[in-house]
Amino acid sequence: MKTKKIGLCLYSVRDFCADEAGLDGSLARIKAAGYPAVQVSGVGPIPPRTIKRLLDMHGLVCCACHEKPAELRSNFAGIVEKLKTLDCTFTALGSPGAENMTAGKLPDLIRELEDWGRRFADAGIRFGYHNHSFEFERFDGRLALELLLEKTDPRFVAAEIDTYWVQHGGGDPVDWVHRVKGRMPAIHCKDYAVTANVPHFAEVGHGNLDWRRILAACRETGVEWYIVEQDKPVPSGRDIFESVRMSYEFLETNL
Picture 1 (tube, helix red, strand yellow):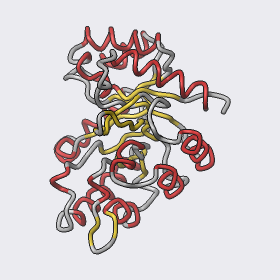
Picture 2: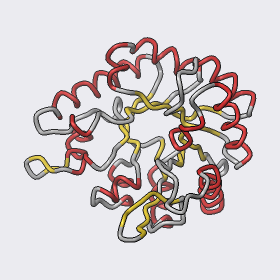
Picture 3: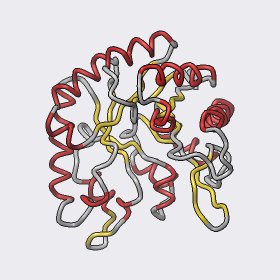
């Protein structure tokens, strides 16, 4: 890999990005940790032009975003404008909500994903789906995530596989990376560990996932961006900015 495209999902440090000053300080620390890019997700109500100005000031790019279903339904044009302002060409549905992942509601979600993806494609933006573990429930013997991906056109609905949540759902992250070959421009790198019999998030390369195989699968299947996300600090209470620095250093060394 000539250029190591490693980004940080800002949801990881959302508690520090509630306003412009917090985002400014957070981006400075993220850049100092080595990251060249961020995924804009979980920040406070900060205007896109302000976010772009801060990204430029800190020498960072926006490699991806996340969207919410309600906003996609009510303000699609505004989302496209935001993405254009951020020079972002890939975004994904962060979550439809676990309560909407049912046998009865899945067909409607699939139709919406396809519609949103077509509309984004018309605007020159690629759209994807970010999984959690609730998509690993079976409906008539099939995993919801299988159905979701099989019944949507890869041209309009890409994948943004989250390694932790695949593991949490009982899947194999390596298998799922191969399943979406050519369909995943960005992956969420998130490690999985267990302490006192309780599963929890861990810094990439410091948990139990087999990153040698995961990263090899990513290289083989055309993944472009490796986006670190850590939903919560580790049980030891380590500073989240220290955690994301550790994750970057592991990926930078092993990609």
